Length: 144
Ligand SMILES: [Zn+2]
Image (cartoon, rainbow, N blue to C red):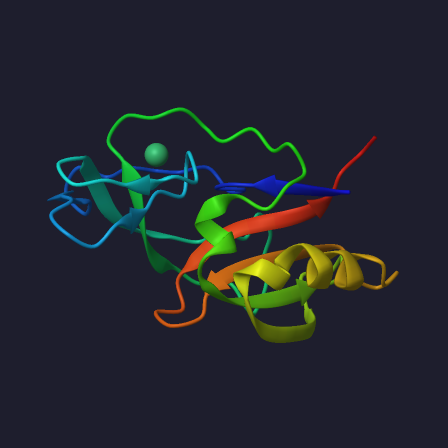
């Protein structure tokens, strides 16, 4: 079973560096509630590094978050936000080194994520939006 973890590293919102945006036409994917911002929603655009430890793969990418929303609570299913987009899956080991990767359509995320996490050397996955390359969500093995 999968656990979707939005914003695995603490989100620091710097008033100087965050850009306010009002959604006008294209839906903007919020990384906190994992729902797309709809027309008129107030969102922030900021840089975010999802790594919780030192890794040569760490680095910031641009993300959107609603100015106000609740953190997503994983139920084990692929969130709609990822289901409908083209994604890059990056598999990391316990030392935060990339051990595998692939690009898929979001409707295959559940299957491919379960395959990656069935490998003993894979500790967790980072999912990115394949086009812009920005971080989407982390996927862990759910503890049941
Ligand atoms: Zn949100």
